[in-house]
Length: 24
Image (tube, rainbow, N blue to C red; front, side):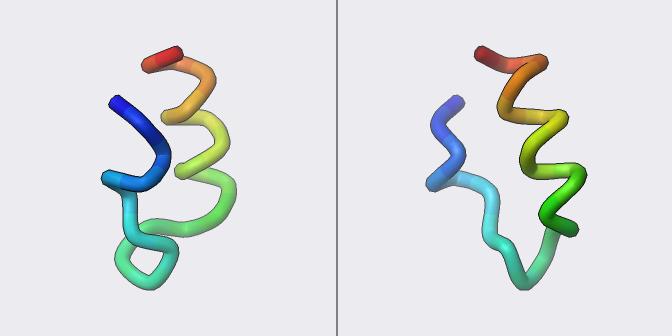
């Protein structure tokens, strides 16, 4: 899933980065 799906306000920047790497 693209990072756009994750909202910075709901998720921490670190989680977004880690999730992005895991998903991608």
